[in-house]
Amino acid sequence: MRILFFIAVLAFFGHTALGQGKAPTKKQAFENEFRIGIFWPPVWEHTNQAQYKIIKDAHINYIQNVLGSQLDTEERNRKMLELAGKNGLKLFVADPRVNGSADDIKAMVECYRKYPATSGYYVVDEPDVKGMDGAAKKYQTILSFDRQAVPYVNLLPSWAVPDYDNYVTQWIEKCGKENLKYLSFDCYPFLLDGTLRNTYYQNLNVIRKAGLKIGVPTSCYLQSVGIPGSYRRPSEADMRLNVYSCLAYGIKNLVWFTYWTPTGRGEKFTNAIIDSCGKKTDLYVPFQQLNLRISQLGKTLINLDALSVYHVGKEVAAGMDALPSDYVLQPESHNAELLLADFKEKTVHKQFVMIVNKSVQFPVSLPFHLKTGTQIREVAHASGDSKKSRYDKRSQTLYVDLLPGEGKLFEIY
Image (cartoon, rainbow, N blue to C red; front, top):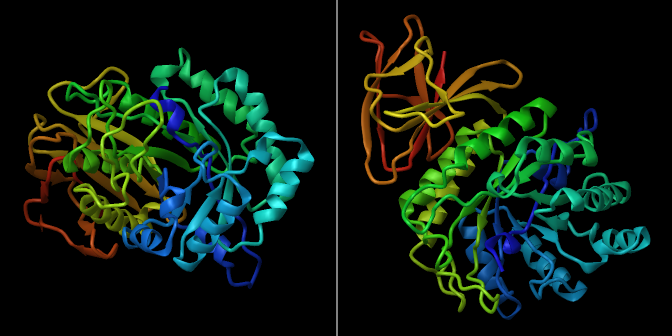
C-alpha cells in the first residue's frame, strides 16, 4: 500500500459564531485556536495516561483517529476521549458507523458528542473525484446532527491528480463552501534521493488561493517519518522547512504524519517521533520545540491571511511568484533561497511578512532593506509577543539570521 493510504484526512474546523454577551464554550474556544495535531496515535496497548502526557508535553492540541487503526471501536474511542479530556486534548473519532445510513451516523454522533474532548469525525482520506459525492453526503449528514462537529476529509496531493485546480474546486462545490470547516490536503516533500518534491510549493499555493477565495482556513500534513524506497526520514532542518513553509502559505492547521511508528501495515516505516515500543526517538525534541514555536506564532497567524507568497533565489520555479522590485522589504542579495510571505491582519489590516530560509543545508545571515518611512518588529518565537528586531532605523536595514529551514515573522508599520 502507498503512503496515501495511511494519512488520515481532515477537512477541518471553521469559526462558530459566539453568542452575544456570552463567554465561549471550551469547544468554541478550541475552534479559534491554531491547530497542531498528530496522526497515528499510540496503539491500543499504549493508550494510557503516560503516553497522552507525552503528547500534551509536546504542545499538541488534538489527535486524529482513523478507521482501520484498531482504535475504531466504540470502547476504544471512548477510552481515547477520556484520556484526551484529562490531558486538555481534543480527538477526532473514527467509527465505522460513518459508512452506514443516516440513522447510523446519527447514532455515532449521539454516542460521542457530549464528550468535551470530541472535536470531529473521520469521513474519508484522499477521495478521488468519483468518491467525492459519497464523502460530501457523509460530511453534510454529520453536520445535520451536530453543526459544531468537524467532519474531516483530506484531499489528494497535486502530483496524484491530473487537473488539480478542478479537483479542489469540485470538492468545495460538492461539500458546499458554507459547510466546509477546513480545506485539507497532504503532500510529503522529502524524497529518498535528498530532493524536495517539485510540486510541493505549487500544491500549497493552489490550496492557499482556494481557501482565500471561499474564506475557509486551510490544513496540511507534515512529514515526520520515512518510507524505504520512497521518502527519506526527515532531519530537524527538514522538519523546520516543512513547518515554516506551510505557515508562510497561510496554513492554520498542521498535522504530523506520523506520530507513532506504524507496524504491520504491508509497508515499512522508519522510526517516527515515537517508536513502535512507545519510546521517544531523536525527532521528539525538535518536534516538541517546533510545536511550541507554532503555538506562539499561531496567536498572531490565526488572524492573518497570506495574500501573496514570493520566492527569492537564483531560479524561481515555474508558477511561483518572484519578489517584486517594489515590495516593502528587499534582501540585499537575491542569491539566497528564500520565501517572503505577505500577510494582512483580517480586521485592522496590519501588515506582516514571514521570511523563510528554503535551504535545509545552509543558514542565512542577510540584510534586508525596508521601504522609507516604515519600521519593523519581530513576533517572538518564545512568547508570541512583539519584540524589538535587529533593525537599523538610520539605514532602514533589517538584519536576519535563519537556521536551515527556519522562518521568522515580522510586523511592518
